[in-house]
Image (cartoon, rainbow, N blue to C red):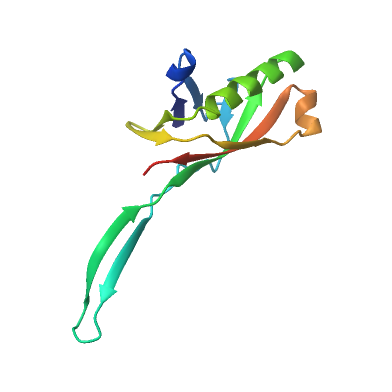
Length: 138
């Protein structure tokens, strides 16, 4: 089971928990990716000596990304649920805790990019998909 928890302390609200279990307001869709940190190394080589010297190394910003199904129950509930998610994802700095099984990991995140699909079939049953990309520190 995959669960992400978005801290909303800066908004004066309780954390927003989203998991891959159906039947809740927010559901992580299959293929949700928590991102793999990559490393950028700088190596200086000499024309007169074998090998090289590592001069710098840094881990790049990566992203948590995927789709979240939002189930509002009714049209007003859908609008409110999407607004709540957008507010949580729009914070300037916040933490996201990702739990896969029994090993939770917390990341410091930046404002996310998100987009609604506006799927007419899903909206008729008061649901919609939101695609998110949350930049996170390594």
